[in-house]
Length: 114
Length: 115
Image 1 (cartoon, each protein chain N blue to C red):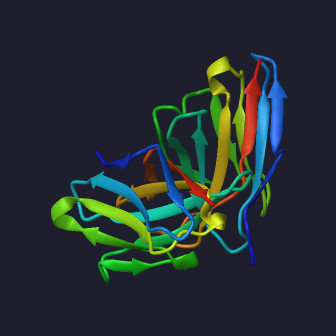
Image 2: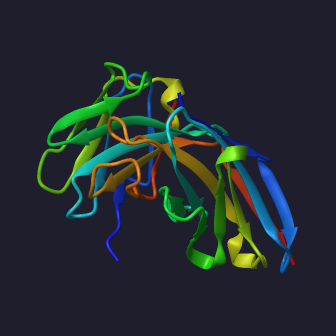
């Protein structure tokens, strides 16, 4: 069965600092990996996804993530945090079987300090 | 930009009552999903739906739950007899293609509180 672990339920960084949100996955087949962001009172919005093309994936709002098969990781980074990045971030995995359900991690709440 | 919409945004109900959560997926999408998130827990898959049939359902999706596409635009989740533990945020999602790499587009959610 697939699973996702996000290390750190809360991450706090200063404005302008590097953002690093960790995601490790478990999958018996080559995975598809997603990062979603949820702003207060809004739905989940796709930031980026890995679909077995380039291992370094660029997304919206300056975020990127690198798929590392040897480490079973898909960490999300942004070089310089902005106050508007404060939100909850979810890593998710799916495969190409069945109806493509997403399996989510528990989420990481990112706080940006001025 | 097309988006998934959900109504109501909040619903409070008494235990044992029936609730219907409504979703309008993106208009040209063919695959529909419901997920839920109990406060403080992970977002969990409930059910997927295609061509007027359930494609897959989780263990959570028992006989108390049902889904329906009553017309060409709406997709509903019904809980027949709500329990306290059904209190959660319920998300609807849709996608236009089949395949694990396809993006699922999520609505803003309905927060259900069962008293």
